[in-house]
Length: 369
Ligand SMILES: NC(=O)c1ccc[n+]([C@@H]2O[C@H](COP(=O)([O-])OP(=O)(O)OC[C@H]3O[C@@H](n4cnc5c(N)ncnc54)[C@H](O)[C@@H]3O)[C@@H](O)[C@H]2O)c1
Ligand SMILES: [Zn+2]
Image (cartoon, rainbow, N blue to C red; front, top):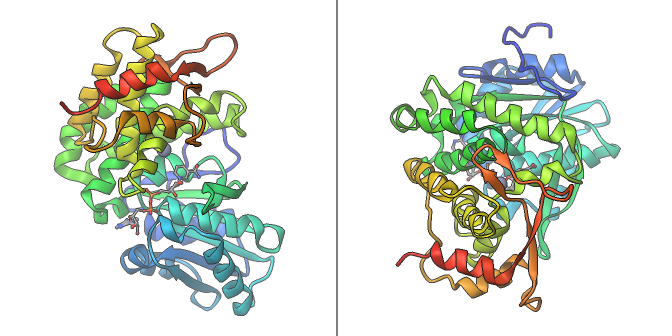
């Protein structure tokens, strides 16, 4: 790429992914090389824009670049904001020769990505994730979309970015809890695909606790995590099979998030979900004994929650795993580990049926006593 010094990761994807500390001032050069356009629309949220938009804007041609910012938060990932943003692009005179730059966490990545997927039937997008979760999870894989009152991410499209710029220095301004919640997904990637990655994250936790975003280990750990996500997505982009393994911890996490009315960070819910689901796997004889406690202790070291929040009823959570409260006394399919680093695969499927009783008892075992 012209004018870009850093080397992208070597990944089985059709687009370059850059990871590094101090990369944000390079964003414009990467955008201009990977997705040159007449206009550059930087889409962000007000929190991220106040902290990091100037650096990105300064790296792009000022007369052909504009910032479009919305309020922060999951509640803004809506069709209403999609309408607002697409209308603002038209009002600005943007046409097909426009590149969208998604600068923010997963909310902005998904929303701006969906704007890009649909604007004039699709324009290019460069993802510039600014949360750890967005780096290791949301920015790679091409899923975009918005929430509806019927559920999260229910309207969307697959739309690969033209490039991804992971400037780890942006993580320095994250609230600590939001930073930690990204560690849950990094540990998840190790659990589903590579125990060495799990061990490396675990070993770096004391350093990360001390140095945060400027831990010298962070770029390599982010890269490891992205490599895992990319290799899974490359083999199964549309979640027919292998991609289900990335849902480890998420069936319980979604039930917990729903029961908490989304007042809990996603990564925190995933942490709890992984502990419960590892217990389920042990109870079914799928996972090696000790898998759940290994996962539990790693998450605790990362400062993540490991038991279901007080006041949540295990029975209600079981109902929540069906996504439909009427459907009690049944079963749900889970993707489960056989040990840290390896997911269980039986009968040609990456998921297995779990009856409600087993989920219920694992939830009780994960409640605070
Ligand atoms: N497309 C996918 O494959 C995929 C995968 C995982 C998650 N997601 C989506 O990602 C979303 C969650 O992402 P998230 O956790 O990044 O949430 P988020 O985008 O809401 O960001 C969390 C908070 O941190 C703030 N923030 C972001 N970057 C900051 C920075 N550098 N400094 C200070 N504050 C900053 C934001 O303003 C926000 O308040 C969900 O909507 C989820 O559905 C998508
Ligand atoms: Zn997740």
